[in-house]
Length: 207
Image 1 (spheres, rainbow, N blue to C red):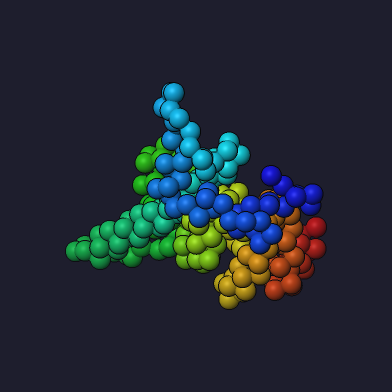
Image 2: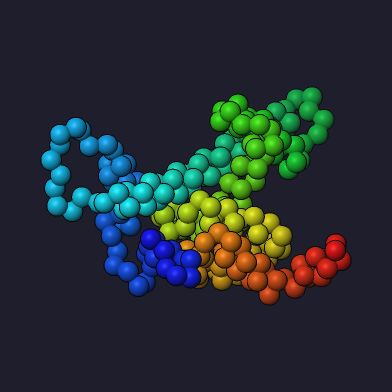
């Protein structure tokens, strides 16, 4: 269900009543989405197909947020192990951040059957959410943002200086949940260019 301007009319939008799907936690979402046994009688209040589709999207958002947390945790474990090995007897050098990311991606790739490039991308996105964009991660976990929307915010944040990221995130999230991915991307770029004008000059120079 969409409004004429292309924005979503659900996900806690202020102009619509909160539904049972929107307030459901991950366990409840799974329960709603489980197929009903053949011949089972339906009861009042059972979500319609459209609501169940929204429930599936919200559950994917929660899974993506949890995956980001677990990927970041795996990276921490790999880093810790690498540092202990590098600090052991006979070690010649420490573990740089680049090597640490490579080691984590190599650990992640076979676990999720990913290519090396895909593993690096997932690792970078996960660390950005956990370390740099905690509000975006929280909104993703709550289902306020879809996976697609969260990735747009993450990708655009990569060109924003660290000290500007909190302001960027706060401004984008004011309306981001109600925007389709193309509109959200345009909004992210406007916010980025307002907070970090140098990025405009870089684009002009590259052209």
